[in-house]
Amino acid sequence: MKETKELNLPLGPELNKWELLSKGEDPFGEQMTLQMGPQHPATHGVLRLELETDGEAVTKITPYIGYLHRCFEKVAESVTYPQVVPYCDRMDYLAGMNMCLGYVLAVEKLMEIEVNDRVQTLRVMVNELNRIASHCVALATYGLDIGAWTPLLYLFQAREHILDILEELSGARMLFNYIRIGGLAKDIPDNGWTKKVENFLGYFEPKIPELNDLLSYNKIFIERTANVGAMSQEIAIAYGVTGPNLRATGFDYDMRRDAPYSGYENYEFEPQLGSGEQGKPGDCWDRYIVRVREMGESMKIIRQALDRLPEGDVQEKIPKNFNKMPVGEVYTSTEAPRGELGIYLVSDGTKIPYRVKARSGAYCSVSALPAFASGVLIADLVAIVASIDIVLGEVDR
Amino acid sequence: MTPKEISQRLNADGFQVTYQDTAPDPHIEVPRESIYDVAKHLRDNPDLAFDSLMCLSGLDYTERMEVAYQILSYQHRHRVTLKVQCPKDDPVIPTVSKVWPTADWHEREAYDLVGMRFEGHDDLRRILLPEDWEGHPLQKDYESPDKWHDIPLTNIPKNSTDEGN
Image (tube, rainbow over all chains, first blue to last red; front, side):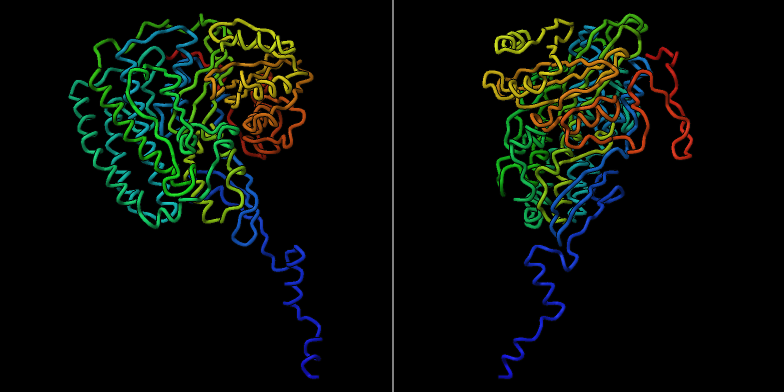
């Protein structure tokens, strides 16, 4: 009799909560809105992600950007065509060469300037060097975000060599302003610069297997990244995700091979695709390994460029001032380290561009984040944000 | 397909589009009422298969506004530029964000910076500028404010005279 009495006791406050939980309510206050950023070590700059969380799970992501908006498009409408070039460097400050090339190709297409072989080859060379440097930072900070300190030191050391090489060429370490309309700022220095590039390639070649030992095939790293945040091809294409992130889903498209510019059709290389080697195709590990292997392909391209580097002038004849520009509009797309850089340029015939629109790869990668990353754990979200390799300078422009 | 063939194909399929052979890049002009249908047709027709919107930009031509769409078909590897015009005092264009999700953020940017309105867009908020910013900086008659929340703003220098090269 006593036992039944106890069973009939009214439920305590804690038990009431469990009953509420089964009805879909939130009695324990598990659902929260968290602000990840704008100052957060894992957002690679000033990005704010508003997270709706349920315990450890992220149910909804809303990215807020614009903290690093430097009005590239507005500024470009108030300075002359050549004066826009240095602002391009600042869009993606980790890959200044690639940014400048995109803009310069647009202006050259508008003005119908053909540059010679030497200019094209040197442009390819510095672009690929810069791509390696950019991927080094991407991979280093990726490791750092999920707790691997050491690869950062190794990769930054390697990047330092590239920056030295490019500094010798342009005088600057990150904001080069080297690729100019109709050519290059100056020719390569005659103190054996090409030899230095060769030495760097010799030095960097064994660094990739070393990185693989250190991080890529590290058990803990694979556990943290494989099967996490897999992006499907449909989402990648629908959201305009390009570059390594698109190739990581197994989609075979590389602008350098499929829509070549600046003489890329003369080089032999293989676009690297993700295949779900350690998990699902398009997961964080795939996005990582695609970049590692792409560095190897970039080295192949640099070797070929060194072999074929022809003689010639590094600046074509262009009008002294840009007062008589052709009226018209162009769109050029190039393969930057973070996806397609599209420059849409409208000219009204004056020396000042009428409209410059920069379409950046990282912008589209961030916009796809809510579509493929919802439902993950907060710790996994850190890995995902790191794996799509965003530079907020390029997102906000 | 070349842009010209794409334009002819669209006309044959019952849309009223005009091919503009502008140098260096030609474009196809689409009436603003039909942009959604044209976009959907371009995406879903297997011969056209434009599965990706690469870039969407708003343009202010003082008396009219335009939106330019650069689209790409990964399957056929062809690209084309579409353009839609609207009067300056009524800058409303149907959204294509339901066709190509890329347009979601790009349309927000065009709204934010150029002042285009996209009819049917779910979430047309400012994206790069602060929410309480007034005006749309890429409009040609825009004047930068002197202050924002008591923070003095330095104006962007007016057209520099330095030739620079």
